[in-house]
Image (cartoon, rainbow, N blue to C red; front, side, top):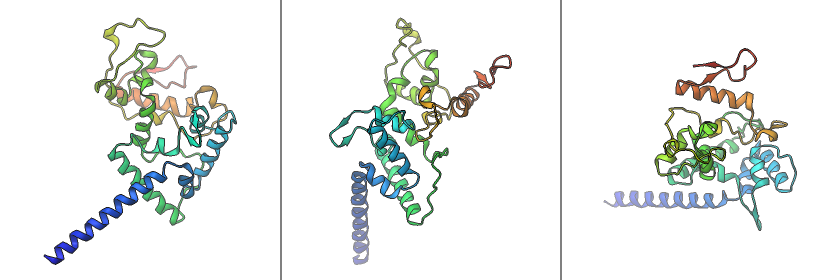
Length: 246
């Protein structure tokens, strides 16, 4: 029994240390300067772009910087921070994933194995980033009509609508019939971040909402059309008699 009690006490101590560390890190993550103290390359570049945007420098270097430049500030507390896009919806499961990723990144930093590539194209946890997008941009997903099908046909839009989210008619069709204010689910792996890349710098992209139309968006459209089993393919090849349809 004494050995069992000692083991239980040790487990409780470790649990308390773990919870305390998690809470401490969670508070520190609210500050971009803490994030960049470990995430040195290429995150310092992203931080510098954000600071330039906050200082009024335009055009913004990338989509992430545009969020900083366009968001209001309150005193020293910025309206948006790194963690706002990197912790998902803030729920306990996403919090656990965020802290696990933080521990992983800390290990990479300690061992000197960080990847210095600035324009990264590989996403480690796209579902976490997409959940953060939805937290702020749900209203975009719930605009009905074909002209917004690249948003309202995403799985995130269907889940939000099925959970009680209210679809609204598009501005160009204010009288859209009630029967059309619905979403048909599409089984696709395409997510918000497949089109909207936050830290990719493309000269001139600010003129098209920081989207890489030919290199990123069209391939994502084609993947979604393939998953849905309908819609045009080869969207970038419009000079050869029009797009191929499924």
